[in-house]
Length: 406
Image (cartoon, rainbow, N blue to C red; front, side, top):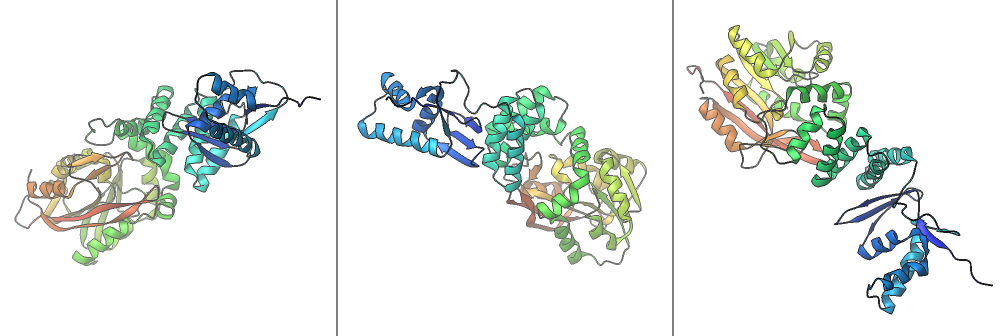
C-alpha cells in the first residue's frame, strides 16, 4: 500500500511581507512572527499547494540550484518544522496554482489583529498584518493610512512613503498625510505646516489630546516653561500675557499666576472650546498666529510676555512669528517658548511633521531682533514612539530702551 501524497500549502492565516531585503511571515493562528532567510523564503513560496515536500525539493534541483546532501537534509527539516509550527499546512489534494502567499478573504481578521498587536506594542508584527490587509483591499484608503503610521513608528521610511503615497491617491484631501509625505520625500520644507493640516490634526486629536500627551507621551513642555518662568518672574499677577497656540490650556495653568490678563490664540476651534472650559483665559481667539499678530499690531496691543509652548514646532522659519511678536512686546517685555532641538541646519522638517531648530539659529534670531538671551537651556519635552524628545526652553527679553527690530 503506497503512502498517501500530502501537498504543502501556505496557512491561509498567514500574513506575508516580502521585499528585496527581508521576508516576514506572521502566523495568525499561532501568533508568531517569523523572519525567513532567503532559502526558507524560497521554500515557503514554492509550497503553493501544488507540490509535495519531495516535489518542492526536486524542483529546486531541477532548476539548477546547487544543493548538497547536507543542505537537502536541512531543507527537509525546515519544511517539517514549518508544518509543525503551522506556517505550512498539509493537504491531501493539490490546491490551485497561483494562490498568493498569505491570501485570505478574511480582511477583518488581519485588520483586527494588526490593531491588537499595535496596542500590545508588537509593532513589526502589526505592520506585517496590516500589509496583508492592504494586499487584500488595495483600494481601501484606511488600510494604507494605518500601514503608513505603523511603518512610521518603525522608522521604515521607504515603506511609510509608499503607504502614504498610495493613501493620498485614494484620499487626496488629507492635509496631515500630505505634510508627512513632504517630510518623507526630503523635499524643501515649507516655512510652516499648512493651516488645513493643523486644523485636521487637532479636530481629530482634541477629544483625547490631554490623555494622549500627558499619560501616553509623558508631555512635560509646560513644566519646563514653569521652571523657566519661576526663576525670572515673581507670580504677582501683573503681566499682560499672550499665549500663542494655547491648545487645551495646559500651559495656561503655568501662565495664569503671572497674568493680570491672559489672552490665548489657537487655529483649532475644537481646542479653543476645550480651553474655554478651563476658565483660565480672559480672552480666547480662533485665528492663525501670524495673522493674529499682525492684527494685534494694527490694534496697538502691547504685551509684557508672549509665550509659545510646543507651538513653534509647526513653524520652520521663525522670522514670521518673531517679526510681529517683537513689535508687540512692551519695553522690558519677554518672549518665552519651547522648540524641539535640531541639528546644525536653521530648521528641519522632521518625519513627525514637526520642525526642529538649532541653537545657533535661535541665537541669531535673538541678535537680529536685538533681544537679550536671558536663558536658553536644553530639556526633555515628551516621548515620541518611546524615544525621548529633547528641546530648547528659551527666554528672550526686550531691553527697556530697545524697540526691537528685524
